[in-house]
Image (cartoon, rainbow, N blue to C red):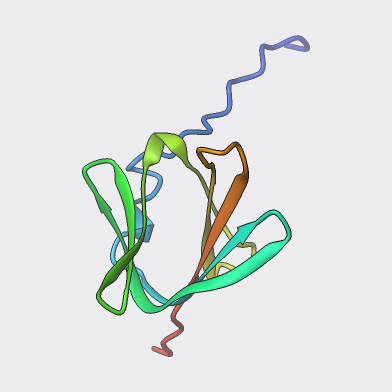
Length: 104
């Protein structure tokens, strides 16, 4: 009762958890690396295919990574998603996709 084992936190993103991201439209995508931030795409969408997250903007693939290499989260404001990974050079990189807002 008092001394329970802590459950392991699942850092790997699973397809069931990320199904809400599929076919989301994106207004713009930002990449943060060290102290540098740059807009890498505008007007696109997020897709899940064969265990990979793919972000396409204006007809070009700007982000394509396997799910097991990513840590995925949603912004507190619920208007975007973050994808964090460690690059080949050991630098932590975060890609933030801001959803398009359509009034319904």
